[in-house]
Length: 154
Image 1: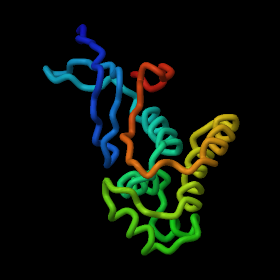
Image 2 (image 1 turned 90 degrees about the horizontal axis):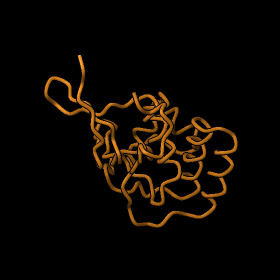
Image 3 (image 1 turned 90 degrees about the vertical axis):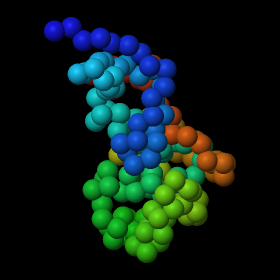
Image 4 (image 1 turned 180 degrees about the vertical axis):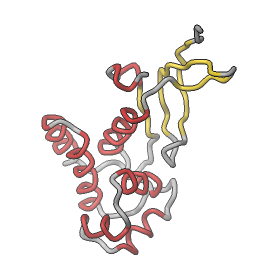
């Protein structure tokens, strides 16, 4: 059975708990519905890398995604980043708004992400990039699948 395939210029995936704008998405028709033809395990790693280097503060929903992805409860996450669990709850309650956490804590979280999902040279590049505090303007989480290795594609 042959499936129809197309590239969609933009697709908004909300399965991460916040909108992720995917660009150049391979799509296939399944039972009459166009659906992304993506390896979500690999895409999750790309989303985490994107969050680590984004040019605006993390949002509450992004922080919750990070915590849950690394299978940390509130207490463990708080302990790892030297904050209280009520602080983590407060940040996560911000939803799609910026958490408001101080930059040193956010930088530590971003470096933690990068250390977990990146190769050593990517980690050091991330560290250098994070020396500069991001702007306060919120930006979309965007992943261009045309810029990825085939591992993200199914």
